[in-house]
Length: 297
Image (tube, rainbow, N blue to C red):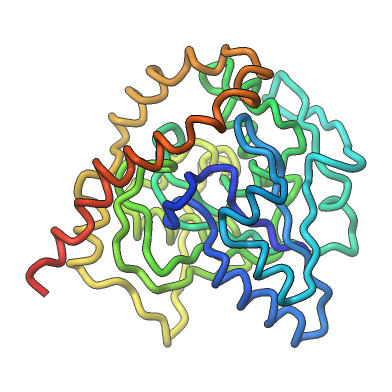
């Protein structure tokens, strides 16, 4: 059983931007109790290598050690190159997740995304692409949406979980205002999971382009379990306040486009040394806003 976490899309010491290791530990224990053999996995990104240092900083080293659970770097090992519909560059995918005997749990933090609208279960599976030079999937304006959609289809999770003690409002995926959430969105269908997430995040699902590709333009709906605890209106308003909008996505996508042409070796060699600046900016500009919507409580 593969537990695909979201580490590459986050910032050190900003827990709302990556999969919470405490929740991951609970998933590991539950899978083991049910007779499964879990492993945790993620692929390298443009500026993040999934090595021992990354796992230690993000709080995963102790979790994996306590539960005797292996970590699999999806950028290492055997890969399969796939040519996909409406995508002009191939996807390099890990053979590990394509094996029929491997079930996939997609576990990510629900948050906004300044280029795609939201980070959901489908966006999390984009992170499983073995190719670390993920800038190539951004070098045409609409390519990223098709890459996310194709990766999610080919590596379709058997169970989708979006969860966090705090939800990442604000300008995700990196700069997030922590909003008390303490909930899990759990679904067998990644499309319905992401529809529920878009409703919580206050972002129109029909404008999430990677989802629109996979739904083929059809409406998606869902039913809540009778015992579900939907966030109250104050929480939903706090999530939406100051969060990225469809207009903001269009602006940010254009502004970010040139930086994807920075040489890959420079990105992987230099960017990690400036991670502390992103952490500092997040605390200065976003975390200070966290208590404001709930000051009256």
